[in-house]
Length: 172
Image 1 (cartoon, rainbow, N blue to C red):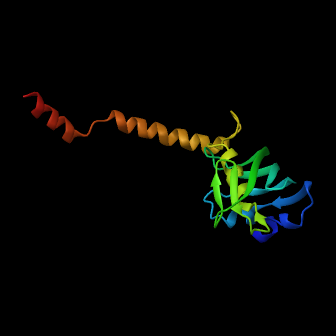
Image 2 (image 1 turned 120 degrees about the vertical axis):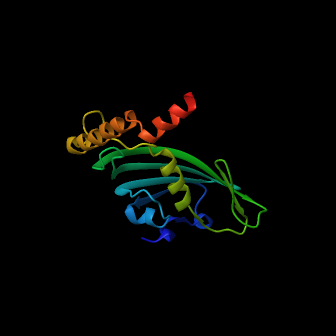
Image 3 (image 1 turned 135 degrees about the vertical axis):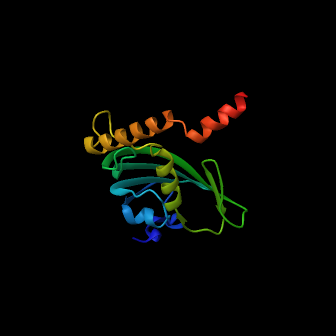
């Protein structure tokens, strides 16, 4: 996969609605050195509405993605269904400037790569915590977690004998 396939050649587009279709998979996220390993197939439909001095992007991302569960580390399938809008305005700027949902690009530009917009909006919409629904985690892993957390709790209740000696000094 090459990020060039996410370029929209707006200089050759007709005024009005222009649909684009893209596919996103694991290799897309590897370009951004993401620490979270996303593995799935996503469909992107971008409706680019060209006007005289701007482009109105209406983007839809749909599909499913497999990630590791944060609790049991088994695979978790997350369904993605996200829509977002972005405006690209032509302006007297030397390079691309992004402010909120508006991207300012030079008048001389003839194409725009939406890969970063897709990546940013996908990762911002992704859950902060990826866990299975209640009672769906791997029971073996949950048992191990409870065993270790129980051992840690017992260790917290025991006071180091050196601290007891210091407490006696403090009480005197």
